[in-house]
Image (cartoon, rainbow, N blue to C red; front, side, top):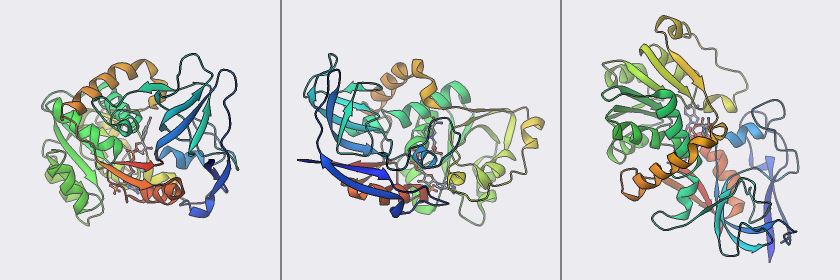
Length: 331
Ligand SMILES: NC(=O)c1ccc[n+]([C@@H]2O[C@H](COP(=O)([O-])OP(=O)(O)OC[C@H]3O[C@@H](n4cnc5c(N)ncnc54)[C@H](OP(=O)(O)O)[C@@H]3O)[C@@H](O)[C@H]2O)c1
């Protein structure tokens, strides 16, 4: 049996290409004392990985050339010399773009496929779900009856944000790319409306969908969408700044023109990184698992098959080819 790994072959300029990744094969390693060997079952592909492909300062250190791409995965413990994990356990954590991972247990959490499937621990019952829960409820702090707008609304984080907003009695408006995604956001996920940011009449659509203005804007994309949304924010509105995906591969940054709205409307805009808030995870995960198990939060997924397809699926996710959580099935 061999191990497959995807390593960073070159640092992209602009959009990543498949040639920026390399698939390598080696023997499956044995765990040392205090370590465990995990056979990865599902790999999560996430926008933050694009930033880790760059050199330079960010909130986490870059992946070095030749290093295995970072990533969350769910797997099964194949052998263990670690006191806290046994063969047969299922775990989720930073196991990387590879079929087999050696871990010292750091960042690993045991999970069970009792009420929800294992792969959900990479989506709505995992990091993206907690991001939605924490960003919306702690920073956005929506009140019943308020209007919550979320961009990348058909994606892993955005789809959960709008559904939690509905559970809290808010009006939930999505922003997504194209009419097909928008009808899914409304028809399948139960948002009140969804606006297509690629349409020529985006601004008119946004105004029609938010007649009372916007109280909370859950920001995932940056650029022109953020600039236009700023003009519809209500006084004392809140903006949890979760992501800026339109800028991750941009070779020239978008120059915002409506930042003055933050002052005029006394808006709170707060960036956050979900991994800083470890204390929030257990309660958020319990609530999310409950909602998913009870069918109150629906999960959308796009699944690629096999580690070799990961680079292509990742590039596609950055372009918006995914619906919901982008996963790679490894076994
Ligand atoms: N702060 C944190 O701790 C944290 C944690 C997790 C995720 N995030 C951020 O949350 C955001 C969503 O992540 P996700 O995992 O849920 O990914 P996702 O939404 O499942 O996938 C990315 C989506 O971004 C949209 N997109 C791509 N380019 C765009 C552009 N130029 N303008 C507008 N939309 C664009 C695409 O949807 P369309 O087809 O609609 O364009 C695409 O499907 C990302 O910005 C990510 O970095 C932050």
